[in-house]
Amino acid sequence: MIRAENGDVVYLEQLKNPIESDATEKAVSKKCEGQLSSVKANSCSSYKGANRTTEMAQEDNNLCWNNLPSIILQEIYSYLSHNCRLRVSQVCKNWRYALFHPHFWKKITFVLKDEESASWSRYLADNFELSVQEVTIICDISNYCAKETLALLRKLKHNRQLRKLFLKPSNSTFECEDSTKCTKELVSSLINIIKRSDHLEALSLGCIEDLTGNARLILVHLRNCQAKHLTTLSLASVKDDPDDYNALNSGYGHMFNSFARLSILTLDYEFLSDSLLKALNSGTMERLVIHVHGWHYQYTGPTDSSWQIFVQKNPKCELRLNLIHSYVGIEKLDTNILRPSMPLTHLKVLFCETVNIRALHRLSRWYSRTLKSLILIDSVQPTTRNMPATYDPSYPHSPDPLVLVAWKCTKLVEIVLLGHKYHQENLLAIARLRGHSLKSLVFAQRFITSGIESWYKAETITHEIKEIMGSQWEPLSDADLPTVVKNPLDGDSREVIMPLVLRDQK
Image (tube, rainbow, N blue to C red):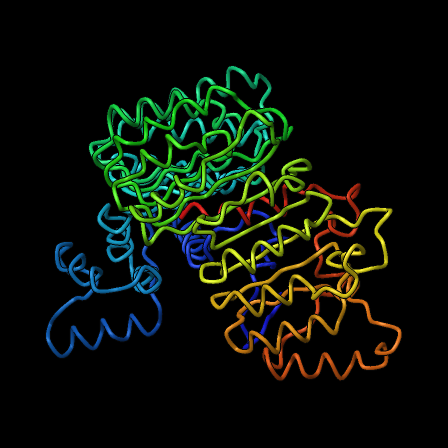
């Protein structure tokens, strides 16, 4: 576990465990799996305390609590949280049956990782496939889990009450025996769900490249069937090849003008255009997430004037920009991608192999009133220099750009820098400038360097940062770092990327 200032747990714990469902939902699923055998066996097991309560009730009031009418039990359960319902469902068989009333299973997280979890998911699907309203599918990338995911989607296509569907894979590509056939069937099932649902509000393709490659086709059906209802749409991808993009996507911006309630939208950079921003004029946008992979001169992106109009129409919208293996995009970030009027709040630069110092200076000048989070993560390169990544040899006496970001950007609450050297004195300066307003300050011990004259102050500097950030703050140890950050040949960068980008979809 990695802890930050004020005792907060930093999200980087997810980097070592790429796909994790909500802790409560996992506990719920695990407990319910244990109860499933009891339900099927038609057994009745009670706590000693519960038996005693029943005896007292029979003695005092001639009542039997385990024979309460189902409508009374359902009313009682309706006042309880899911975890509390789990506990009381262990009183006896009737109370356990009440737990599995469809009213209490409107939101289900299906975990498809192995036979045990898939078996439990099949049981839930068989019972609630027509009544569940919000579905999250956490799946592995194996051929087995791809088949289980497809089977689950086929069941859900008959559900007219389904309102939200989120895919959360462990990787961005399924390992199918016949990938073309598998993709075609998955897309077909999704389209059937889109057509059958009476009120689909949210759809996420989970950054699965096989599905996002069919984004235009899916978008057409969403516009025809769900334009009045859709509020959340995640079509962005994590590409295996950053230069593999669809040039036709840039011409589909106008299609979004049909979605009158859209508030969260994730897209790849090739979708981003003047026509797209013009189409998003409903005033309901709250989050726009753009994934930048490859970069091509044909994709000039929206003009600054288009961003100005977009912000006027959607004053509450946050722009989150994610550069993923974008080796050219990082070089073009300051000149061709960033625009002064962008409502940029979150910037992630993930495994782009370099730091664009000019772009960092842009952040402090252009987004001082909007920027909230800055994340820079890379693998250690064999040629990594000893000088800090933010040091500009052309202007050796210029201020450190990260320190300037911490000083100028008044809403900044998160800074993460992994895979690049950084001076401990500047790390202290960031802590002093942001103070308690900085909720997450994540640096690794192996990347923190010191000047010749201040190496002996390392312990004192760490102590002062702890006083500012909280006593539990520590630089990350090697054990806490994802394997791929320490060595690009020993891990998969997508194990780090997927949890970070998937949290943008809700």
